[in-house]
Image 1 (cartoon, rainbow, N blue to C red):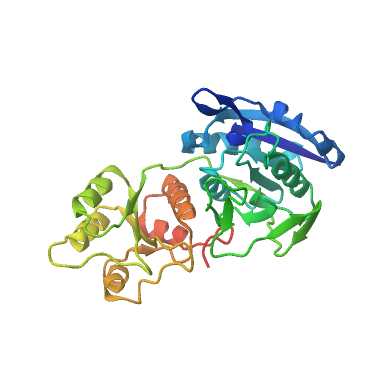
Image 2: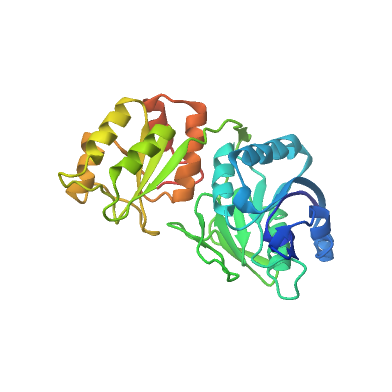
Length: 329
């Protein structure tokens, strides 16, 4: 029988009702009491990294999660992390970069309703996660939620309240879980020894374009961050009317060693800066990095990981375009 380590971080799944709203209070051991049939599929031990609403998740907590996995990697066959849904996609992306080549599964799950309620998705999500973490086909970082298995670098929360909270973006589901059986569509193989990273640079900003937005906001973000992601329209571009100074600001910032990435606000199919003149010059004249089909959560976390290792522009570019856990095609 597989040995699984359950790592708690809080979230809705561990919340109780208070006068001011839901707040995480249950420990990992208390969560296990609600699903005693888990003992039929694996042996579980627990630790608690934190017990917070996932709105409060920070890169420091990701580093703590990596330490917990690294310290216990040889003792267990897999890991199940319970987590709030609001930032779960960021955590799954971050761990995909910070724990690479794991031949053991690192499964992240949570719930839209607390586990103590009569109507809740908590018990199913937990059971499915332990079932998958105990299988011989699982490896690397995945989210298991609403019977779907999603690659860690491709998950996004697309519903705020319903049980089908997460979708896979620009990548198929790895599989589904039905009636206690795993139906695997894609085998996500990892091989070799795991590689751990414990350095991140959180100075990554997101600049979302809206019509008429003053470029002074963009300049301010570049002053405060080492990298800025421009979330543009459609396939990607930047306003080019004479009253705007975006091109000059981008060029000056790149000359000062800043990293600028262009992505799209559109969820599916990714960017293509070569299509329109407003994007073509960015890519070919200014050497702005392009996210292509990478999802925003992965872009954010990949930049934090890269800038934690190097500030050399050539190395940043090379690492950004290096595929990690099928994050970019």
